[in-house]
Amino acid sequence: MDTTATALVGISHGTASPAGQAAVQRLIDAVTAATATAAETTAAPAARPALVRLGHVDVQQPDVAASLGALPTGLPAVVVPLLLSAGYHVHVDLRHEIDAVADRQVRLAAALGPDDRLVDVLRRRLDEAGATGDDAVVLAVAGSSDVRAVDDCRDMGERLATALGVPVTVGFLSAAEPRLADAIAAVRGADAGRRRVVAASYLLAPGYFQDLAAAAGADLVTEPLLTPDDAPNELVDVVLDRFAAALAGAGASADSEAREA
Image (cartoon, rainbow, N blue to C red; front, top):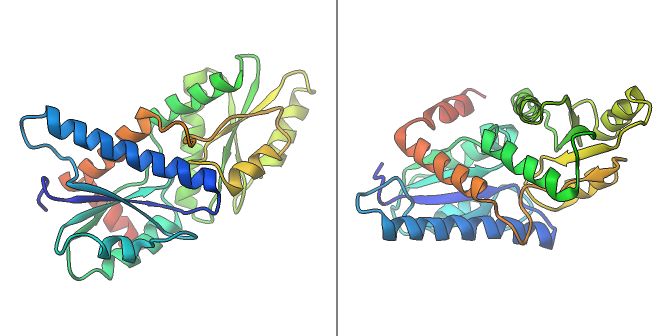
């Protein structure tokens, strides 16, 4: 695949939330801006996309097929899942869509997480929300019926615990256990209510799951990783790194795993 003439197609889950839509679009705009800056400042060809587009695996349009079909004729593409873990949408839905493409070469990159740079964003969101070292922390994640995605989320919980130097419990909003409300209640009960319980939102953007997290009973809930006003540089870097890794062949592991699912 030509590393200097390849499209980056970011595929989000999709959401009906205007704030969530704006937040994901802000990320794509930031990736586009970073790509343009790199093109202006880098003399040698780099693993940067020729163009950047946004599509969705559910809820919104354009869908995956339409997003790929709208690219210039024959232009190769890397699909970067704008998803925090590699579950059914990555291993099955996106693989199915990519395998159906006959008019261009398309590679599937890895999901955005786990990644230590996302831990940095989580820590910043905790600081912004007013969390302190005396608070108990529960990582609020969407959840999945795919054990690989659940393992990814638990991995992020361990990474955040290491970074904070305190235990972090993972609570799921769907499909997996413990459910977030139960995890919050258990942490509060174990501490006899002496400390605040903070839900650290490990969600990409505002929307349905963020609303569920806000209603799960924590004393404090952080903003998701993306907001309409903030696309952290760490996320931009992760997206571009996933693109570059897929071009370099590191994305082959995601491809092979998906084909085996």
